[in-house]
Length: 388
Ligand code: ACO
Image (cartoon, rainbow, N blue to C red; front, side, top):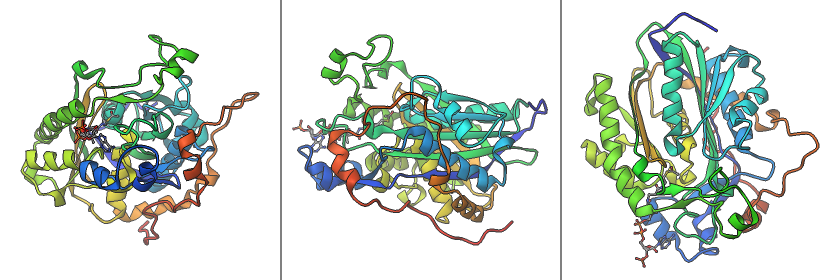
């Protein structure tokens, strides 16, 4: 492992993966007492992606990771550290990051998961930055990946309408020239610990027939309290990161907020005194993908031409814990390199299954019909010309 410290860590690669299954508001109307109109006006969400039975958090993460490495122009073994943010790991152990390391063909990195719910990607990014600037690593892979549709109660209309599946990844590379993450702000407020939580499965309440009968293996949430936390915290966390970077909000070209609720994003814009055209929004097509939401949005923003070299970006998230996190970033990579991600096909990336063990059918009964439909293409794929 390198011992040469570098002052900067540039984002040199980015990639994303979204499963083909689509769960629409019209589908949810058939499951719970809700309406497309209510979901659209209260959240901004129209549809979310749903992973198929053969997919897991690790398999989606590995595709996004291989794409980010391809965009960076690196080989898998160039990666020194793999950090994977998730609240929906494949297993309690080993880490999902360890499975991804093998799936992408890396033999050298150390790998670990990061648990900070929807803020997890920003937390993992800050750790990756620190590994590079301390000289412990030259190239760090930071992933956010979630398979939330298997942790939802499809009779609870306050949660099942919100969440979706997907993965996003970036590569951070050591650099001597200014760029990359210039200011970070992370907060943890345990007063909100039980406002979004999953009661059973841990040491406090191990999984059992009783916990399953009580539905305690599903995400629970106080939406109103969480909404208040988000609107109270997001703008101040973003502002702190901007100030630490030595910038003003007006210097920022694009904000990429956690994609939870359009009204929350609107309130961040108001709090920062900015118009909505400075806020990147794609939650209408993905819902809330927790730790995957920002890396998916970042990759989509770059690939759709919203980012150019020299732009100043802010990513900002909130989530269970409560946690919040923001980073102010100076963008240095040629956006056209994003087309290199297309060389990585999902069918070419495999996560090794365990020997002598078969999982039970992972698909919730409410989603069986949805997943039997023909899938939609991966969003955003485009064949741009790539400058070497
Ligand atoms: N369809 C129709 N009606 C609904 C639905 C639904 N899906 N869900 C709730 N309602 C009803 C409620 O029962 C309530 O009815 P009542 O007035 O008769 O009691 C009414 O709508 C209003 O409910 P509220 O909860 O006040 O609705 P609100 O406008 O706050 O929207 C929402 C709810 C969308 C959940 C919002 O509070 C929110 O987005 N909160 C933040 C949640 C979030 O982002 N969580 C992710 C955190 S990230 C992480 O770490 C996982």
